[in-house]
Image (cartoon, rainbow, N blue to C red; front, side, top):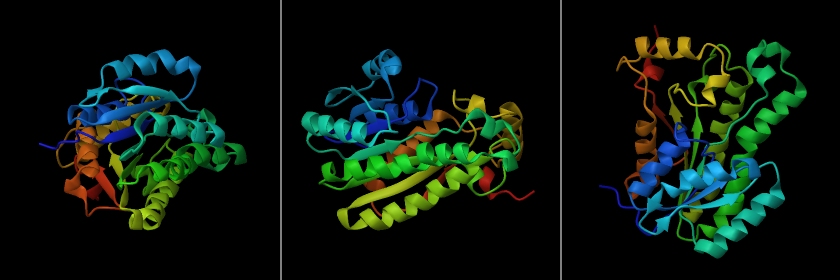
Length: 259
């Protein structure tokens, strides 16, 4: 059994109990980690506090912090508050992605400059921004984890600009891993198969994607949130001490298939 007692994990992107971030937070707290849950704005405060109440590690219940990742000032202020609360942190989970709806539903060639910028700012640059703010608090080393998807490698209908952003995110994981390795900080990504989350509902033909995935994957089913959470716990743990700069597929084997 993995024991994360005494470790502090900061989680961005926990939207609801169906989200992958929640499954990751559950696994971390069950292993004993103390959690800091970061939510975007005042509108989401109540939901974040309700979710945090059910995530109690060995160090007590999760605490919540408001942080709009579009603001470097808010990121800095949040990590000042986290430092005052915990002193040292050990793990950072970045489960944040967004693209304007029209950039998802329209043909890719119609992607506007602004939609392209927003998708990369929110889905990619925020990983760099929160990592930079977290590193001074990760004095004992640790791990940084983000979430990607197979659309970074292959064309997935209706995924469009998010696929391009996820490709940039995966490259960012490698560059961050190189940059932070001397500090004992590992940076990895999990590429999960399609899951019925609130965010995924914004992608057209989700059910068709799920059906195709289950038909072609070697395990002939879709992955569950808890399985992604388990993989995240492994990557955060000492069992993965030699793994950095990698993309781990948790997709029932779908990515290995040709035809």
